[in-house]
Image (tube, rainbow, N blue to C red; front, side, top):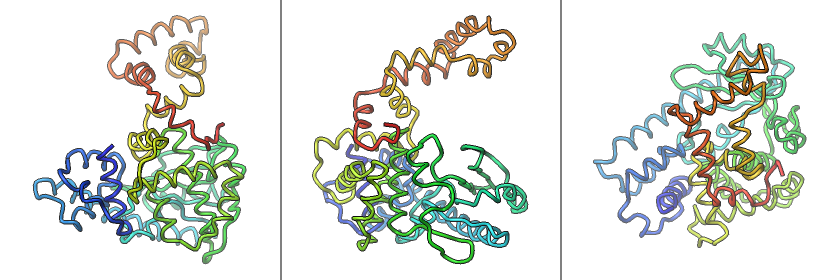
Length: 378
């Protein structure tokens, strides 16, 4: 917990000059701090804070500074690539909107302090068939197609460019959000040419929904919480009555108030309230995008351990046919293949951890952290 609190306070100091309690800066365990920061994709901003505070000893400087330099190089590459793709979209008359980190990084003292693994862009799906052609011309290769009707399309280009085109901001796996955000740039306003954006208020609503989706499915780390905290600090003129009216429509008004409580503890140094302990520990354990254990905990909460384990040990015919093709040819062999799978799960290295230990070691704290209001799946 102390390492997470220190990391959070350092992030707040770097992002907006928030003061840090002196006791947190005493006897820093730099190895634990680096490991935590790496898991949450915030090494660069923590390194920046440590250097500003003159708290980065030479013997620990190398890994931190390497991530800071890499972050600057990555952001510069991402920015150039984003501008190139924006020109391509303009040239073809394709409406688009930059999302998430591409917007948030502008609020940080330096854009590279807000790390991004990929660049997220919403696009007009009427032009879906055009993406592949010009992306290949720009040196990208297709790496993933997902979402209803394959509208979400991801491309990569070495050394570290990942572009995700989103036809739907929230797919049908979360119908409440899908209906609210739509697929045709609802609530957007023009920027220039084919580019549109959310108003400041609607962007916050989107951030809140994106945070909630990750939080309840597999967890969300401190970087997303810092975004929420910094956004509110940088935009004091926000119409909060409108925001909470919209959040109520998607059942997130109570959730975001809880998250405001969390950000006060993490980034303002407010007193830790007992009801927030499990939530904060869950966030600290989640890493940037959540964990397999957290995702298992969500399923356990919904189904119970016994039902979940039964389904994992004895999957349906469609699942088994993918992993054991003989089942597709002869369904009578399904029980035998279940036996083969059980032997594999319990005795083959690498399987037990994901199928047995992960679920059986789900803690009460992990499930309790999800009992707060706002789960889009009920």
